[in-house]
Image (cartoon, rainbow, N blue to C red; front, side, top):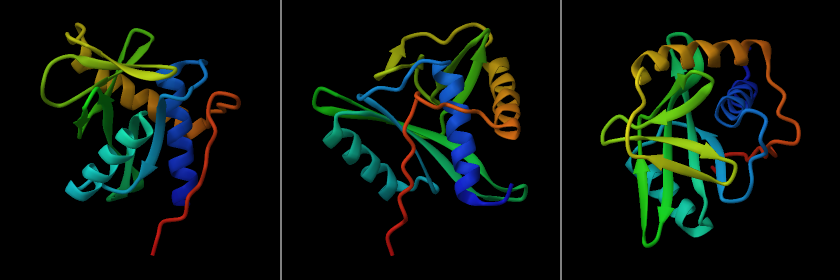
Length: 160
């Protein structure tokens, strides 16, 4: 597997399955994939989230020593007049539930079909859950995951 689009697509399907199970993603939340998130990309993602009034989960991809792969997760959640933005988040598998853990601050996020929901506390075992989520993601990417009916994938060519 060396095609960047195929790699991003497989990871997107896998992350959707981990976060939603078999529930359908609905308007109000979106997953997007792209390159590394620098300060300009953070501003752009926050603007898109604010204008669309949708919670965004950005799967970050880049070249690494192991090849092109998912290197991070960034979320933006517009609430009232502010967009909450968290870089360097990680997936954590607690029991059968996958959560999103921001690196700083308190709590964690769960993905409902139409929004990211912030929970004020981190569940017991969330740190061990990161390794479990990494292993589960690898398994789902390798074998392939079909999310027909759960999400609509759109490939957009980069500008320039």
